[in-house]
Image (tube, rainbow, N blue to C red; front, top):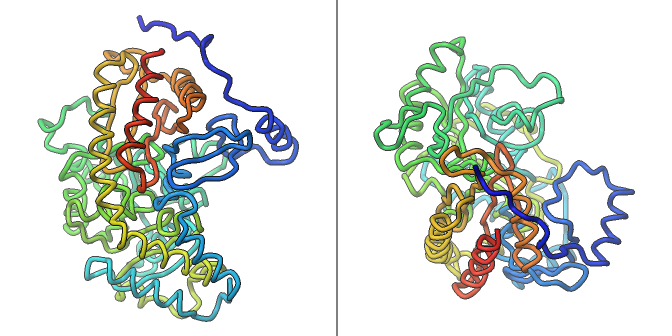
Length: 440
């Protein structure tokens, strides 16, 4: 039996100004957006955030893996200010910032990804990939994975592998086939890596043989699953999936909306296994707080579209592209992906020590500066502990560490600070989490 965790000692989280704004929010806002902790944020700098009551926090969320260069980086702020005074949106006309960003993005890619289509959000990028795959191949089916998250628009939701994100919205788009992701901590086949020989990757043959009508256009997969609880496949799994696509004449779409721009310790997660996807979806970190996303693909694929057949009202606008150009300069000059790899190794080491010491922390996993802490009621049964996870979040926030939760069961805390985090800031934040876990 797992012990009951007392909530009597949880310090007060909500200050008076936050309480005031939360009352207004409940009266005016739709109430369907995520609220990880009962505080209202006011401003930020680097890895630090302040709420409207003046309380300071170390940020482990990066605005849901967006602010990779840190909050309000001076060079990013300056680029946005200068461009806002010059030109913000013209839609149908190219501008120097848009063209230059496309050129620089192509230069960062594997050689086959030689064209850039700029959009606004990750959902737009994944939907554009789905549409392009169907148009180019003339086929209609997409293979996706249990637990996958590709956005909140209808097409993107249809490719998502979490029932919770689709429940109550009616019938999704037809033609999406699902296969299990490599969730080794909770393997659906009750196997153990590496003895399993990546059995779940081979299951794609079974999906094709039993579910497909012989009309598969593409496969879409994340390098790690963020929405499902920061689930990282073992080394070689993505390569095996990529090989399956080649063997079956299926386009390989890699969704790096979360994983790109240094988050995993490489500029792009595909670098870890030298993947060569036919399409790459990127977003979030590309604008580091300014809404930008892109679909990188091959000229031969885009050739099936006539001018105007796929566009985005705000995609590639001068304001956002100027911001993204500044982000690229910051990465180049400050080597943020190297910092993510270095500081991330330290943090994951600390978190795994906490896992061994805490009876409720079932798994600590990650790479670079993206990690997940999965909380359970009992390590033997692995029964999820979502209520305890909320308690950990509230205690951490009260102690000055801002965290949020994700996962199938809402029992995984995301650890994803801005990539500018220093070793000393990492130590301080880990010290706070360690004290929280010891207080349970």
